[in-house]
Length: 205
Image (cartoon, rainbow, N blue to C red; front, top):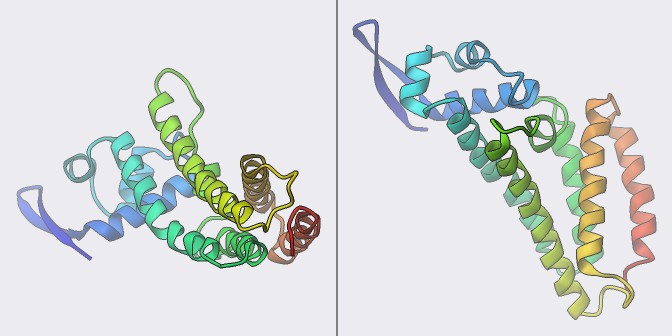
């Protein structure tokens, strides 16, 4: 944790920048990029608007930093799952980790990369693309791991690694939406079980 000192009404005030960033992450996660007002953000972060601008820049730059932090927090477990030597356990762990993350009671339901994405228009196009790029980076990791599995003879010959990676991402994103819609952990687990049954037909034991 790093602390910085800033001026507020003529007197110094120290705040924990990492904690403020985490609180901003939760606001964007809960309300979405466009739904999160500056008042929502400053109240959660415990700072005023001038302090927000001084420490993080504008709302877009704050959201970009939040995306980077979200990536830092979520990617280690994803990478650990994909590092499994056998492809089926790797994908199973990946999906079960996803369920644990999107049903974690200490954070908003679902995924920031689904809930937080802004509507794409001329104003929000750059930040919209930043969210898309982060989703695509996850898909790329899955695609690369599936390509390795194909080379190792763990995928059926008819299976294209890119197509399967896209399918897994579509299912994973759908789990997040279902969680936001109110699906429970147990219900999502059953959905994963059904998906994994179908997946087994595409893999070589």
